[in-house]
Image (cartoon, rainbow, N blue to C red):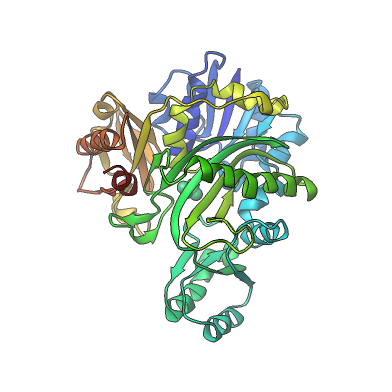
Length: 438
Ligand code: GLY
């Protein structure tokens, strides 16, 4: 088989390695990919000149290389309708159609859908007018709100506001997201512990793959601005068997059924961003609420989940195309994994001073026991690697226990440097899980 992956980050690198592990897969092409991917396997080839919106070039490459599956891994080409485009050329792909992916790229529509189908969500209002939104805040009680841009914003479109003044500032900040922030949502903050859960879906059935817990704020201690994700652990100990049962009955089953009823059958990876809430949700009377749905793998969640899947990943994706998902079970190696995002100093605000700086230690660290490195904002210059983005790489450590995985991760991170002291990372990834186990 030959696979073409669309995207360029750590998630796509983890996917490329998952496919490359399959003895049935001869070649994994990634467009555009990043320069670190080809270090991992001779099967992987990147196409830096083909961007995620170059739909014609992607279609031509898929035809020329006789690709068996194009895996559209990134949110924005999904939102722009790449899966629909490939289908119009008769090219097989994996990922939701544009209308199904709307569950992520239009958060206002997404919340309305959830309300129509009685899914557990907080109270919210949608606005396209700053004055009306500010007046809503002024006349309501002061409480925790989340102000969310309706469109895609690279994981940074959600602002937490604890006071009326913070809420008014967050509303004004929606402009910074351009078209994505023209419509925005104000919703009551749910209090509790967040988790990410992933399911593979074929339209009318699904299999849960695994859970993880991301750490979204920039700095150690869960402080600072929101980022695309600074690190992750999998599985998340926040979810019991009972919670998984509740999630199936109150979220995943009605989600798939609702999407069929609204003629948007969902095929692809479904990412449930959820919360174990302190208060019961009013629609389901359970303690699990939906923060958001995404129409793809999470990043960095993919990096901690995909390496632990025992199934042949290509066969799992093929089962979706063959409508045979019901007969599959997803198996795991039972290890705990932790990832730490190695970022350019200043990320997520301004990390431009780090661009082009040399990175030291990657190749040695990649050889360490229990460590895997995935590239993201990274570029090859001669025989060296240099910084080319905010999140430079994701270091993943595996272990039998969370303590072992964390010790390995921290020891390995200590061997990586960026010229001019330009490396920044969190030192507390997995702290909740550690607390649960000590
Ligand atoms: N883990 C955050 C995201 O992928 O959106």
